[in-house]
Image (tube, rainbow, N blue to C red):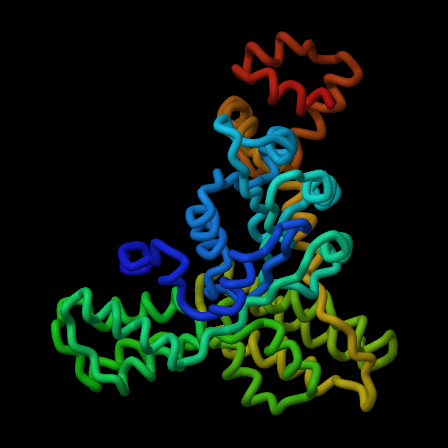
Length: 380
């Protein structure tokens, strides 16, 4: 992929935000740094190039290595050099408290990155970090970078088309390079008619922007069209709308009407899942977006849109669901049921039987060939 082939190798080659790069290079690093910026602006790449420029070992912190990263954050490398401690996309991490402790205690240069600086999860992080903002790249900057890639690949792309690519990507370097590679595939000379390949792909709209239009009471026809251009799945859009609806519409009749439209939309989404007939989407999308917009009260209490708690709960329960699935795959053939039915009905039953010692632990483990971890789940 061209995004990897032509990835900058030094800070001097980094595209855009030159003043930010200069400040990071000359920084004394007395405080940790929180780098914010839109997706595709190069936050992670900038961190990698900075470590390379300074000659620092780079340590990426994940939720699996927090304890070892804590030790490395307070010591130098094997040869006495500094380390660069990096927490990428910190707003998506669960154990924020441990990450705050790590960042606060670090004796090495430390960087956290995020694409959502308004997240409430970052309130404590912001208090201990110096905030640095990467701005979205201007179209002219993106065009110059695309022209450089064209020269390296020995392909001719007219400046007008490069401008169209940059505008379509809205400053996202990664997307613009991917679009350029798509247009140049099998061609040495790209023509204006080839832009149809680019325009055939829907421009993805931001879900927050879409929510603003829904709660702002935009026309049903406009909302229906916008919903088809979102990168989110219809079920996900419905969950987003449902999560934020009570905060804006209050608890009166308008909320009841809006929820009624959402429930009717959910019925059609269920029919799509069962019958695999996507024609029902022509009813589901207007109901969930236009129906909610039509139910809007005269005055609403504007609030910051929240990420759906439903997905947070799914994330927290993922390990349990995966465990039920693996146990079900082993046990369901003996019970002549599907692994799904086993997870829904039999797991809780076996937990009760084990708790009341009506079934022996070793007996069950041997019969279904369960691991120690799987048995620990059933006996917990």
